[in-house]
Image: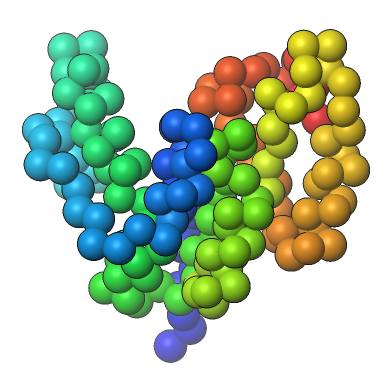
Length: 163
């Protein structure tokens, strides 16, 4: 049987500063919160739950933050083993979790396939800096691809700093 490769995963707290510290935490469990999004996920989004999103927005946001706070290497390893996945593309969301965080995780766990990203906060308001040079350096160091997340990174593809 051919091993399954997961589409992608996240390590570390991608929403808060210095999120890479979470990667090596041990014994982290999800806070018990009402998670209405899991209802739609359990039904593979075959129902109209998404129409109720405005009603449950705060609960969904809290549940997503609780889920995000469990993004440790230990939990990733366990999740992959439980479902028979051999590798997971792990995506950074700079500036909170960067390529160096994922490269270090990949050095400890062979299932981690590290990607890199662009830290738009480091480019400055004038769009200074060279994300292309940083990307090339990360690729030489083992990055297997590039992740851009305009919503969390609060930028747009039309901004001067975007690749």
